[in-house]
Image 1 (cartoon, rainbow, N blue to C red):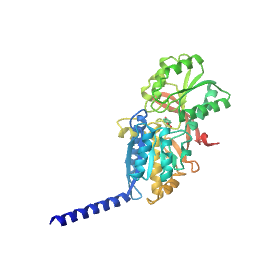
Image 2: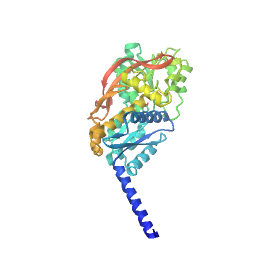
Image 3: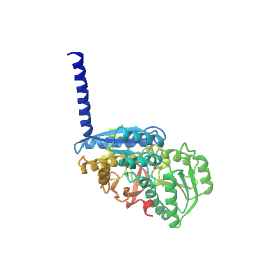
Image 4: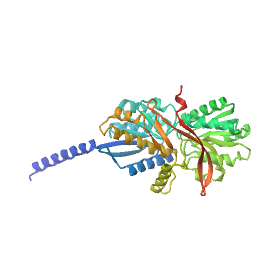
Length: 390
Ligand code: PHB
C-alpha cells in the first residue's frame, strides 16, 4: 500500500467509525443525572445515584430498543455549577432527559435551560413547592415541604402540642415548611411563639436553641435539609431541651434514614411526618431496602434514594410508552399521569401540575432489632401539594 492509499483507507475507516458511532448514538438514550456528590449535600448525591443504579441493575439497561446511558455529574452543591453542567449535557452530550437536583436552587437554576431545549427534567430530590412552576418541563418524584408539613400541624394539637417554635433553614423548602406548618397549626387552634431561620451553609444551631429554651414551647418544629438532622438532634439533646419538657417534631428530613441510626437513643420518640421510611411495611419496600443494602455495603436507603429510584421508573416508562422514538415533548407527556406502586406506597404524577401525589405518614422513632427506625403509625392518603391549591 502506498502512502496515499493508506491515508485514503484511514480516512474512510475513520468516517465509517464515526458513522457507526452516530448509528450507535441513535440507539442510545442518555440521562444526565446532576447531583451534589461532594459539598454539603453529598449524602443526597450518594443516595440518589445508588438508587438510580439499582433501578438499572434490576430493570436492565435496554428499553424500547435503546441502550440507557446514565451520565452522572457532580455539581458540588453549587447551583451555578448545576446550570453549567446542564448546559453541557444538553448541548454537547445531547441528553434526552435531565434528572437529579439535590437542592432547590440547583433545580431553579436549570429551569430556563430545560424549557428552552424542551428537555424533560425529573426533580428527584429538591422539594420547594414552586419548583414545578418554574418550567413546564419539570416533573417531580421527591415531595414538597407543604405536603409533609401540614399533616404534622394536624397531628400536634390533638397530641398536647399547642405552643410551638419553628426553626428552619433559611431558603425555599424551609420557608415553605414554616409557612404551611404555621398556617395549619393556627387554623387548628395552636400557636407559633416564634419563627427562627438558620443559614443553609454551616449553620450553628446553638444560639437558636438557647432562644427556644427561653421561650419554653411545647415543641420545636424543625426543617433542615437531608444530612443536617444529626447536628440538630445532637445540640438539642446536649442543651437538655428534652429534659426541659420541649418535644422535637419536624418533617422527616430531620430523622433522615441516612443518619438516624447514628443519632443514638436520644432520638427515640421523635415524631415526624414524611413520605418515606425505610421501615415502611410493604413487601415492595422490604425488597427495595434489602437490594439497596446489598448493592451498597449495607447502606440504608433514605427518602432521597426513593425519589431517585421512582424517577428512573418514570423515565423508563416514558421511553417505553413512546417506543423509543419520542422527543422531549412526547417523553414529557408520557411522564404525566403515571401511577404506580413505589417503595413508599402508591404514587401518582399529577398531569396538571407534574408534581407528585402521595401518602404522608406520621412516624415515631422506635428501636427495632437494635436499630433506630421511623415507624409509621398513621397515614394521610393521596396528599397533593397544598402549595398548589391556590
Ligand atoms: C431542597 O433544597 O429542596 C431540599 C433539600 C433537602 C431536603 C429537602 C429539600 O431534605
